[in-house]
Image (tube, rainbow, N blue to C red):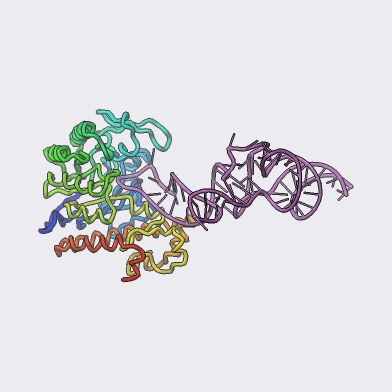
Length: 377
RNA sequence: GGAGGGUUAGCGAAGUGGUCAAACGCGGCAGACUGUAAAUCUGUUCCUUCGGGUUCCAUGGUUCAAAUCCAUGACCCUCCA
């Protein structure tokens, strides 16, 4: 079975949309946040936990699984779904982000990208065709084109060349993509150049992908600029296809970009921040490592229905994090993912009731509220 | 009783005349993290009114200058009786 997308509603006041992703006889609502499980696991959590938190699609990574255990092993296991025992939809990133995070400019050529295996130093070469082939063997449901994710800022000349390369790579990938049980997304790049974003989007649309991602955001640019980059991209994308904003998951960014017409998001933040002792709350992010929580026996978030908040106190979670007990990272991962899942659910409700702007204002007001003011509630 | 070795910041441990308020590690306190080389990385960690002040077991001494050299004492460790 293939992933299908149905757009079901347009917010008359903003560009926000409601939709459904249908997979394996189940429907998942969009806008949606996708937890990241780079190495075929959402770090510290079992697939059951991830599902119970309300997750639909989860992410995995071509580059990481290519290196270890190797796509052939995953294929032999019967594909990622069986290998990791997750029956919801799985999206694989192409390795394009690793071009940004691991490769040096000189390693990028027309043919592909040279990587140094971060595990053992081996020289590796990834091409658009190879990326698609690996993703086929992994058996993910949504496949990403191999692109070049470019940092910010970037000069126009480099960006233009890079967009052209990303487009040629997209075409090469599409040419070898079989699509029997998978769908393929193109990725809009172009940095902070409207004409390049437009050009990239329009060229990809001509190639007719199953969905479109927006890449090259959350690479160090100010938030306002990210929002503009998203606007520069969504404008030129078809209404009836999924729009995926890659790597964005800060709570406020989720709201802002849903308003700009994004359907799905992914981000490592909830799980990485969790491992580093941070928790999302209505009043912003808190750092459980802070000494002030050592004897705070209240839950991370009053009224939160997650397993962590229903059963444990800040002081306990703080102790686990300080003692480097892995259960602490698990408890915070549960809370943070639950928080984002709830946020997406609230966002969907507010799209339905045409109150997304008001919801955003109220959310932002609370999120940036200073400690001192919280007691006045 | 004899012979050696030792005592440095919260802890461990470098330093053996000036460049030492004293490397480094741990612990502590903060910060960062956005398609995960990330249970990682960064800053800070004697006091201070930021001018400076007071430190390297204690006391006394040598020296322009001492954590560093000398004397005495205290405590710890090893070996020999």
